[in-house]
Image (cartoon, rainbow, N blue to C red; front, side):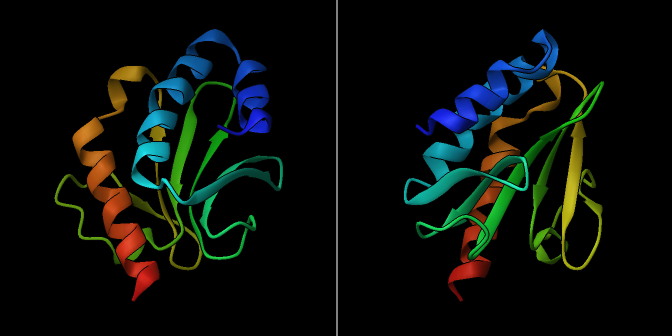
Length: 119
């Protein structure tokens, strides 16, 4: 576990921290070799040991929600329709509460995102 991510989450308002704390173990379990570090001020998980080199996903807190983003999210087949396309190839989902975190769905997204990076 990376202490800078722990500090980031610890500095959030209670409901945002709870969202991050529910999602983080899913990310860490799915990307056991992924390097979770703060990059550009928010937690980012990348393959390898350098943040930003082969990034896979990120968490970013705002005033009332946490964004979970996937760098190549637009390339992931998302039958749920929850991933919203963003800049470049990214896609993300806004999480307003811990109920918005579906462990099976998010783990599937992460497995697909890792597979894209390993191609």
